[in-house]
Length: 368
Image (cartoon, rainbow, N blue to C red; front, side, top):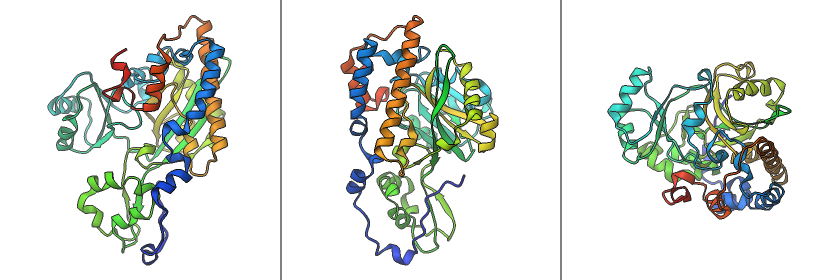
């Protein structure tokens, strides 16, 4: 899969082109709406399902093997440890504050070199996820890393996907409700325009302008040779400019069988999104050369809804369908003896709309 933003307008015509103000782009395209705005209608459906379940926190029973079902504050490393090693990148975990020397020692023991991906064990929406390419960058990153830290090898496979999977506790059903293909933020040179000018031609890239200025510095004024591609952001997160594309056409019995096999060894896991890289689509269907970087629980969104071509009614149908699946799975687990977590709904509301979850220093998790 070729992952780039195509900029086909001739350089001479770019400078005179009228660009839509970003605030209008945010209004016109719901993929840029604040989380609490886009998902506010889902609150009414959640309330309806909560009344049927007789619990405001019914969803915590959907994944009894994950803290709060994966609603917020779950440990990424605890979930990764449930997955067979053949599907994982080399991964290190440091429970408390650590040093560059300690990390380098463990990397050498495990045959890991730079670049690596560093991220907090608890956090959402790409919070403090960074590609680290040297000891100096690692030292800078660790200055603000005061909690559990995950260090993963940087997987070089080009195809990155998010696959939302479910299975019923009684074994009656399993399936995949969403596949999203990730197109990383990049620009391609024309031999005349600077990196800054190329970025300015893409609304998606313009949203990241402040971060890119800080990251690229003087390179922003570099003129890229014609055809040369510059990757602007290596982290496949929508809030960092990655374009999410609907890959639902990839769903078939072969793909479901692969994730049935992966999930079968994950005790207490029934619903969530696998964020992974794979060497090719053919290998994905064959269940080989798959590297799962992260798994999210009950707050997993059907990320294909952020495809710019998607319409809002269809997006809401996908959201509500997945909410219904979480409800049904949780009710089955409840019938099997799993308890709902007794937490006040107001606290759940706060964290749901904050979306920083345990990464936030003011998160209610700290006072539960």
